[in-house]
Length: 552
Image (cartoon, rainbow, N blue to C red; front, side, top):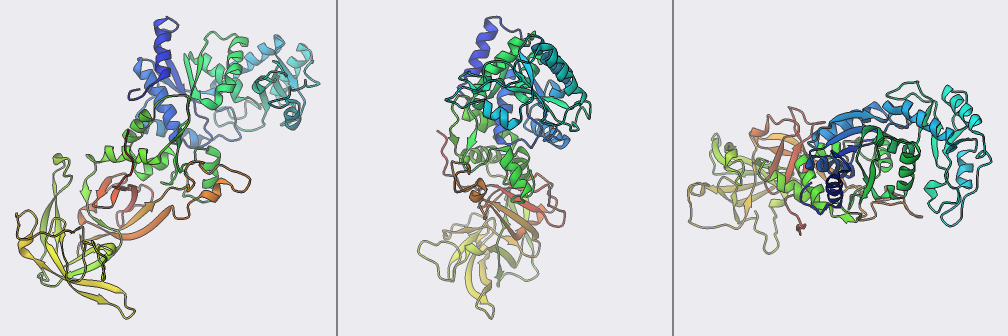
């Protein structure tokens, strides 16, 4: 991983030089209970990037220990997202592949007197656990004999008990100042069909117990996770030691990626989907990888953004404008320039021949000559933006108004001569004249105008839909955290999506899903893969052209 101060990379280098490992092995371990979001992209870039730096390996491993929340749909989407971001895993693994081995390790703990079957309910366990300032108290079942625990645990596996009737707990220290070491639950009963193992199991390991075993089984050298797992590290190390694993992975925590105006919680994102605030997990307003892809963000931009945020213990907020900046930087040489009219106003050029159509030449990208040129039709009637005309303009308004002259991009100077209104006084079209001597590219120097307008030829224009986006969450830095008076849904922006109908140049008739363009003066747009059709393309606004963000 380049472009960042990286303390984890330094640790890996020291461990290699000290001979602790022959090869760096990392893993990206999502739980398949939802779609990946931009926060997961940081973990992907860190795990795959650091392993690549040392010619190591990275496994994609699904932590599928909770069949009640997991689904094959999420497995498939995660695999697609990782590959789209530009990474390929060395091995594809599932926690469920190791269920038998995990069960045997739990039996080992029971035989060592380090685990016991508990009959307390979830609420009772919570009550017995104590608080951050008060120690917990022992369960009345903590003193069960090894023989009784082995028998009960085997009967749990056979399905003799109902959900919640019994659990297996590690036996550590109910008075520990670290509440995670107060006899945590390591197995629970769940009579549910698993997406990978079917109905083979009715008991499932808890994540905190399963995760270190998975790392050890796979030979992971450095188990990288976000800082909220720091308090779990003592239990991670306890499992590795007491289960007598052959390999000893090292857990290292780094700061989460938090972005302004963005929700970074799978639970909250799922709520937005379930309650129809958005159009599915891949809605372009969502911070999911699939949503960003559909909106038009590029994997290159996301990778550079993540690298620039760096790797540290801190979890401060990053301005969402920084991600937009990297998208613009990536697209400015890749995206063809074109013209689109989002809110059309018809202009009739009264002195232009009625039956004439001429083809004008335009560069596809002035910053990248290799993208060549295109031909644009021009005739008597065109569309311009409604905002580019004012009947009574303020001072320093240099666009079109009665008596004023402007340049049409790639075309001619036109001058507003008349305004046509309907019976309600609404402007329906404006009449202009053009000066044939002012054609672009001819070197005309007779006079200058201050305004340049984009346009689309009315006769050949293709109807198009434009989807404009604002941040989904209005509260800039709390990410809509719930408090006593509000939930995060109170921060949802009611104007986060605006759908408008306009026109694009005729050369856009063959656009394909995920094609990206810069519309003159509007911004970068992506052809929506979900709703765009051959008859009517749909364009998602990726980012506007203007940015207040300055890279330090």
